[in-house]
Amino acid sequence: MVEIKDLSAHVGASVTVRGWVEGTRGHGKVAFVSVRDGTGIVQGVLVKNAVDEASWGAHGSLTPESLVSVTGEVKAEPRAPGGYELGLTSLHLLALAEPYPIQPKEHGVDFLLDHRHLWLRSSQQRAGLLVRAEVEQAVHDFFYQRDFVRIDTPILTGSIGEHAGSLFETDYFGERAFLAQTGQLYVETACPAFRRVYCFGPTFRAEKSKTRRHLTEFWMVEPEVAFADSNDNMRLQEEFLSYLVERALENCSEELKVLERDTSKLEIVKSPFPRISYTDAVAELVAKGHEVTWGQDLGATDELALMESREMPLFVHDYPKAAKAFYMKENPADPLTVLCDDLLAPEGYGELIGGSQREDDLERLKARIVEAGLPLDAYAWYLDLRRYGTFPHSGFGLGVERTVAWITGRHHIRELIPFPRLMNRLYP
Image (tube, rainbow, N blue to C red):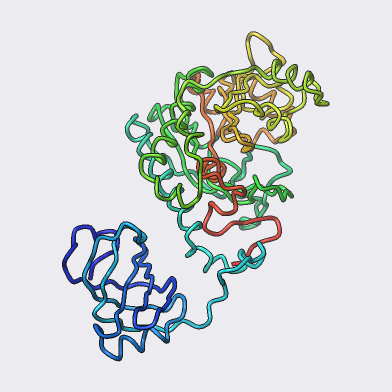
């Protein structure tokens, strides 16, 4: 048995491939079958006089997604998918598929999401998820090469990291618990043990949003670095994102072609990235006619307007304290702001990364927790980090689905996770 991805090593030899039928067609005494085995697609050619009656008859009964075993000589064929085809000598039907729900025609989004478990097999969905897999591997490689230690943080927690209004609450043996919005608070605690750490896992937001940029369950990468300030943090972010793009371009060229991605827009993405302060961003938006006032967080339309004429990712830094989370460090140069940043992607994809220097002053942090209306006792363990050897540190969170959507050029992030969880979707 040979995998389709390895056919180049078997040119001129007879091999057997097992896989699922992508499609069939026939022209008189010549017939064709496309087979997908999970590593690639190959076209098999049957000539009626060169195969037995059983093989020829089996071809006529094939339905999409039937499982087959085909044997034949490997031939180089530039016009065929993958550059090779099989001159078949036999075809065996192993499992006949029932009529396939997804046909080669337009289907509504709800229909496709109802059949997500089957939609995954289509060429564009496979391509997008292969890019996602490459990006996820690149995440681990980037941090491993820089001596980061991966820390697995809890999904069930009694402490929140973002806004209380976006929590999924559950009963934990009579105690209130929440699905984690972030692993950040926990991964911070590992800095004194390992200096450079990161977590990577699912996070949850109970936001009643139906935009193309939101999921209720998504994956985040969250590094944290001891003795790093806000500028160090932004440098790490731009190096990280540039590396992810570079890896996708290097190892996913065929997938990006399937997705019809204009890769010239990615090839220019190199660190360093341009930066603009929140204050200057507001002034730019006001000059463009936007109704935005200093002190409020920037929304999706604001981010879109800022990126209209920009081709590179953009840092917007030093947001107002009142608009940001309690753990962000007060800006010594302007106490009304905090040392934080959002990294915005071009082409309308919005915020890919949010990061900040963390507040390392115990009393300031306690005051911010109280101001946010949160119970101090739930954060006693987090405050211990400031009681026992406080230190400057910074970190950020990158949303995997948004990042992969930008890299692949897909319109909606629901296509870049195997089973999207949306406000109105828990099936399949």
